[in-house]
Length: 361
Image 1 (tube, one colour):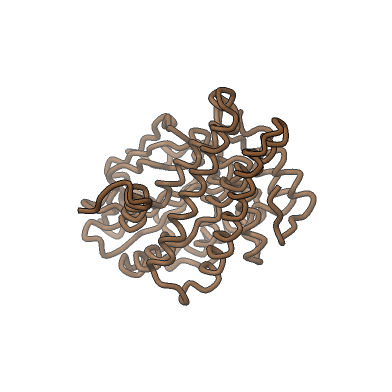
Image 2 (tube, rainbow, N blue to C red):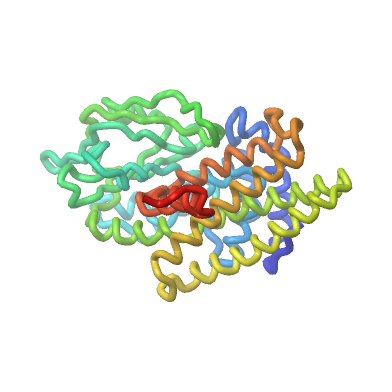
């Protein structure tokens, strides 16, 4: 197994091992809320103050089951948003209602904001009328819907000058918000276990008691543009778990080629992880291009490592429910998660031009 200088508490290890054992069921039937309840019991559901500990936890959960990691990761944004505070009349009430439970893990939050990154017309749009806000349009992806207690929705105004943030209970959502509709879970290539649903609004009035903040679109976009180019520890986690499985397969089959492949990928992993965390620790010391390249390299490594396990295990890896086939799909999901024009274009160039298989025009 790949060694780490960061040791998780024993009780955290036990929960992560439980998550790994149930990953096939989570992939097929949905991540159970009990995963987060167990993480909360051992203090691993909030945001650890020590960054090295959080990165190790991220790697380990993502390697055990990326669907659980994604729901766990989505919880962090509403948590941090509440910790930062809002600027609306009911902000403090919302903070007092939700923050203690989100910090302790008693409550789980969902979030929807990726649509704000998309070019083109705003969808959904936040419309202000007579001192009230209403939503119109569709949230294409709301993760954790079936297991979350509250959803944080961010929506831009039609002129793209402002972003409005709402915290709305998921229970009786359609009754609370006439004109809203929650559709069935999406059937996805990967991560179907994340309880991801579309939510539609038809000029749905949002009560002021759910309005947490308004902020400048330009300020939010500038911060988000930096965050989305940084290396993703979850990609390292998927790669790490795949390398461990490749090494174990090599031992089981007494294959020196498989063992050598695992050793080579381990060395590459260790170098890349060191570079990734150096960038995360001091992003101002690296260029934007260096950060993007590192992010793309991690995603490429995750894809390579998961494919290597499939090749090593041959036909056995093709069977549904096996970790090998699930991780290939998880690695592909990470190629588009938090994707922007910059990261997409960099990944496509690396894929097509990286080894000069194609001629640049």
